[in-house]
Image (cartoon, rainbow, N blue to C red; front, side):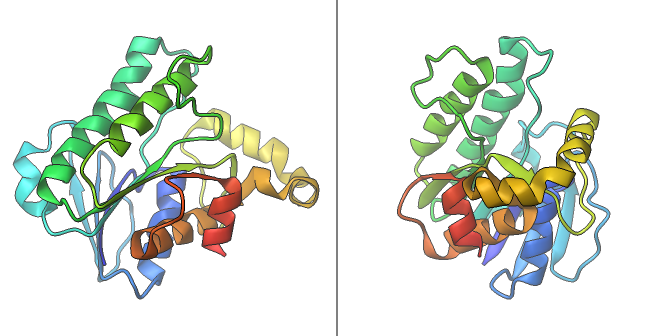
Length: 221
């Protein structure tokens, strides 16, 4: 399959890119983002685009893809709802609408988060906005759209988050990960399992369009 990958320089995106490059089912990967991945591989191409909400100039390069793995995301900490909605909902929906038009046979996989609010009316701002984004994507005419809702993601193979607060948090949690896996295995996944699960969903589909940590781990084993 041919894969479009948004957010390949982030922690989740790095993991997904690694698995795509290793998996023989993935014929080629086009990374679209504001930052270079720093990776070199025969089946990887990159496009640097400052405004990801405006893909008009890239449409010819975005046709003919089987799957999109959308791993872009920001922390809502310190952001107003309007600003967070702009960089989360507006950007994702703009990309989704473009790709649905160019690739109606595409499978779109979106990295959301545990606790996302599908009703769009809960008290948590980030959860409402993520829910709005998920619902908008599910209404688009893709072959399939799947919302990944992981909880804690353990970065493997030297992958690190670009967000300082997340790096500090992972450093503090790291010694307790074996215990956490033992007592609550469905609260934690890894960058490897997220990447493998995305590829499997794109290749085979899944029984649900909303996939939590348990389902991600099962698909990514």
